[in-house]
Structure formats: C-alpha cells, structure tokens
Length: 290
Image (cartoon, rainbow, N blue to C red):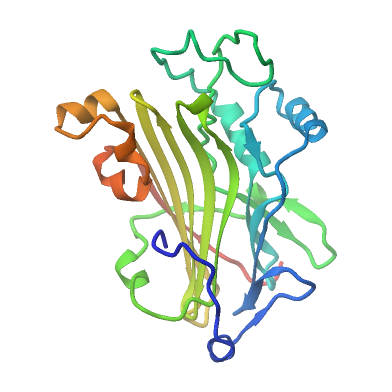
C-alpha cells in the first residue's frame, strides 16, 4: 500500500467485474460485497472547535493541525459492524496513555503551542503518541449505536496478514489516504497520524500509521494493518496486526546508521532499522444480522 501515492482512475469495467459500485450523494468510496467503504476529508479545526475538543479531552494542548472532520469508515451493512478512524478518538488514546515527554536538548528553547512568545514547560507528551488502532461500533437498522465492547470481540491469534499475497497485481478499485493530525514539533521533527485504504476485487486492506521523529533524539513507528478477504461463503473475518517500533538516534548510530534526520524522511524505508517493541495479531469474525 505504501507505494500507492497518487489518485487512481478506476476502470468502470473493473468495478462492474468485481461487483462494486461507487457511493452516491457525492461521497468518496464504494460498495462491494456487503461493505460500504468511505473516506472523508475536512479542514483543520478552527479555534472554537479546538476549545471544544480541549474541554472534552481534558487538555490544553492539541497538535498544530487536527483534521477533525476527516475519517475513514468501513461498514458491513448486513451485520451493522462499523470500523472507523478519526482524530478525536486517536487523541483520546493519547490522553489516556499519558506518556512522559521526550527529553530533548533544545527543550529549554522550544516555545510550544497555544501561548506565543511565552515559555511553556513541556510537562505533557507533546509528540501526541497514540495507541489508537481504530474505533468500532455496531448499528441497528434503526441507526441506534451500541457500544462495540459488548459486540465486537477481537481474538488473539497466530495468523499473520499475508503481505506477499497482497502484493500480487490486481485492479485497485479504490484507494485513499486520510491525514488525521500532524505536528512539526516546532520544526524539530514530525508527529503524523494517517490511515490509508486500498480496495481490490479480493478484499480490502488498510494501514493506520503513527510516525514520530524527534530530530536527533527518537523515532517511533506504530502501525496497525487490517485485512478482510471477500472470499468464502461464511461470515467475513478481519485480521488485525499491530506493530510498534522505536529507537533513539544514539542507538541507531551505534549500529552504523546515519544520525542525520534528513536520512529518515520516509518511515516505510527505515522501519526495518527500528527494533520491534510490541507485536500483536488478532482476528474478528463479523457476525450475521444483529
């Protein structure tokens, strides 16, 4: 998926052959094999909405750019199962995890966030690192939303997503990348949360990625991949694989890797240099009618 970086023009013949149809009412996405897959992109939060979010989240800090109306939604119509990705829930995960701030040599000179020209003490996780791996709800036909915890049961498993099979050439019926939030860390790095989705005739695949680079200090990569195959006559099975990687620039230098931040612009290229600190594979069997 990481290699697909441009708008794709989908052949109508490919859509028809796959049993897919574009979404209506100007929405971006498609309907395929009982799934509605939609991406939405909105503007950066305005100042009044920022204040609302800060109050709800219990914080006085948010990333520089929060795309509050942007999201990716995948809904299995028959069961009402909906998996979606949005900035608010991701920042709720950041607030709950509450990591200590990354120590940086230039911290004393950094002037952060909402109070220009004032020195702000870095007493919070200014990297906005989140453990977020998606939001889940189930909806009745009436539109009533139930708490996902009582309905969706992810099970730990040993089965990995077959990335080799996903690399096989087949038509891409829909692709999009949605930025949820971004912060340049006062020009000292990058903190970025994005979600990408790719839909093929065989199934859908997505990558939720949190990428952090604090220049000269630390790199952190938290990836969540999900895959659902359209094959088979039973209920769909979604596989989810989460992998967290992290390393300091100092640790990388001891292995002979460069310490120049310019060498670490693309997380897809350098991810294998970062040691794994957490890896988990799970699956979810989507039920029939609720």
